[in-house]
Image (tube, rainbow, N blue to C red; front, side, top):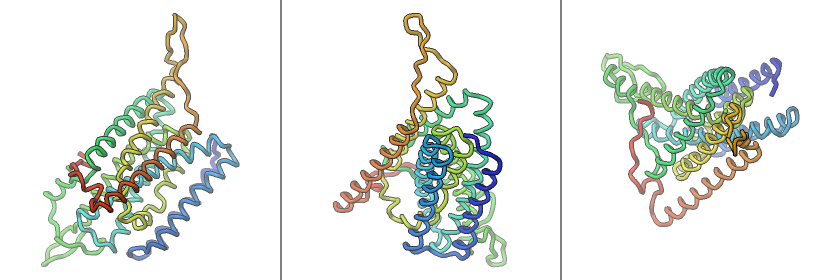
Length: 342
């Protein structure tokens, strides 16, 4: 997909303007958005992504539009799973509800910065070394297995990583938050607030999900333009989605399993494409035959949508059944402690 510098510039200006609206207008004051407010903004951001895909279809064709939608859905699903970890972090460190929106805002900005850096690095590596697809594919398959194991043990949890443990030992902390300030004065002493620990936890979580998301998006499109825009649209409105879904996030008990299937499929797809691009032959009766199949984008998009839809419906059915039986689906099995980093 050839994208001119002018199109890149216009896209960046428009997306930055949309993000600034979110930052300056919606987030101008710390508050907990109402359900109606959250629903309106989430609908707007999803609608913008759908319209953007239609624009790609009109100007570049259905193949690239399908790649954008497949990449956006995959990244959006990973972002929702990222939100679930954010819920655990907010609960673990008892972040007041009226401060959570600003914490989420910082988390989303960090996610954009990290994903942007990884997109640039991934594009440079892919343009120079075709064998990088083998590494990306293997990493996604490994991640899929990890997600499936988490699902088998009842979901994932957050455990303080090495960075958080080191900061706790190295610097003095107050017991209470002071708004979003990182430092405060208590009994005449300058102390760090728990907000510093929260931001470290959010940042390291973003790092891990950025590592997962970039190989996944390159598995459905090689266009840096589509990779970038799919990632930006995937993190738009996550703050509002966090408050809109609320307790519903905890009901998506099969989300990890659905993501495991999606990431595993994309990982296998990447390996097959690497085999085809590197012309690795299959010997059939002394004749070299190109055997690695090409998976069409319509098939990829169908598998991704179907898997996520089945995982969501199955989760809601199970949660409704557990609620009727007086149980909590995610709390039935003791959750393992999984390090976010380190």
